[in-house]
Length: 259
Image 1 (tube, rainbow, N blue to C red):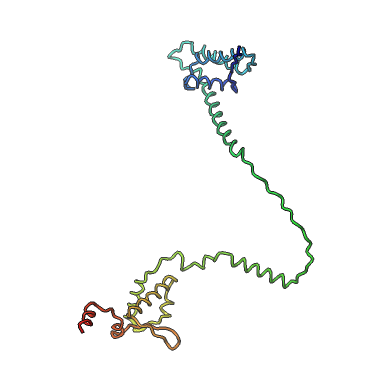
Image 2: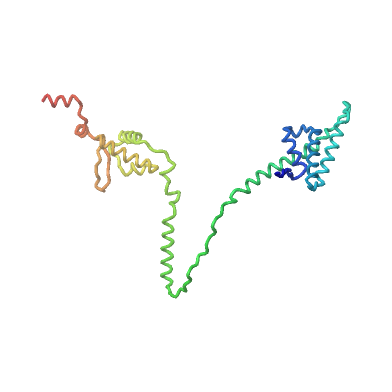
């Protein structure tokens, strides 16, 4: 005949057992049915004694406390006396134990992170030590140090001042510069290209001036002439010079075909 075995779940303490009974009966901690919970609690202690298990004193103490709460709840309650719920102390203890148990579960999961990961440690490097027997002069060492410092200086990023006029300024439209140059010809027939460039306040404006001069020269609006000093001056193009490169219209092409 097959032997029948029984399994009795073991709890960490009386509060752990009470939480299990409340969860089993699907009741809230703040609404403990003392009578039903007490019967199930005493049944668990009785089964522990049947299995010859040593019943800890804290389980007996909790059983006495539950009996005391049950007896207090059996007493009549008068309306003119405001008495505290006899279950209040037990409810507070259960809520505190539940919070500690949940925190312990979270910490237990964190402790398992990386538990099965093993990292190989750094292996010691064995270097051959050789005694230096040569000799160098002071001048040779000084030059070597200067070369090292120069190479290190080249690897450093450029200073912030090197980007002034390039980064952080608004772009200058070429069309605006074309208009400014045309207005200058109202005051003077010739403009020094050098002075025009030196009047710029940023590199972006210098580029815009250069492109504006190229555009005006390309469309034969101005002419660029070399000075005796090797510089350049700008002047307005004459009508004849403008006509040399004026775009041909459809009427001009029709006249050529007719001729």
